Length: 236
Image (cartoon, rainbow, N blue to C red; front, side):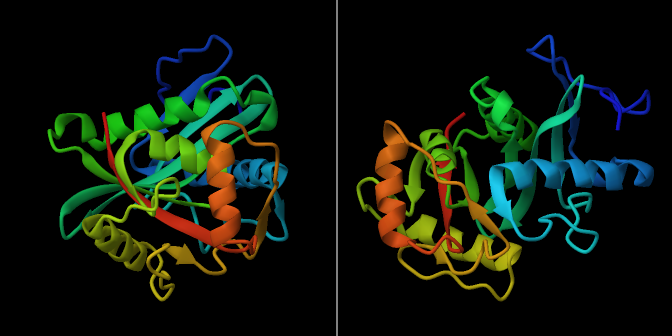
């Protein structure tokens, strides 16, 4: 797939001179001819960042379903980062769910994760809501958990002070049931057993808040296949 996806797609104005960025609020707008090479590229990035025993995205579990939104980042060599997210309706209103964000190691540390988060919040309409917006994610990566928790007023499960918010606990349960039917959460720690049976997170050295999150995660979910499902009130 080319650097600029061809003239069929309109790119975003990029903060980086060496990156081309594309945003698809409806991922099904991506042409069928482009889907397989793009899915292979996305799985390729996941296989670098994780120990993968099988592809994460497949034809039957496709990122090009209408329910997903997608942001893509290219350099001259091809796809280097992507973010998949959803806007879904729950009983309290609209909520954001980060379905998956990956950045190749050579491009980490340049602010791409933060850029993705800003774009997701902007395109979800969260900035227009005075009361903020529910924001959920599933991970066992301490850096990802800390980055997402940083933009939230409150988070459940709270890995740093063990405070529990009943409204956020209820939102966790409802969002998980909507997104992953038949996969219950273990309360109060919001553990999803076997979420990552097909991929294994590469452990690394963690610093600052991420090191504290790593200690809490190691205690709550020592099995690498398990994950935490978290929800917070996003600050914009």
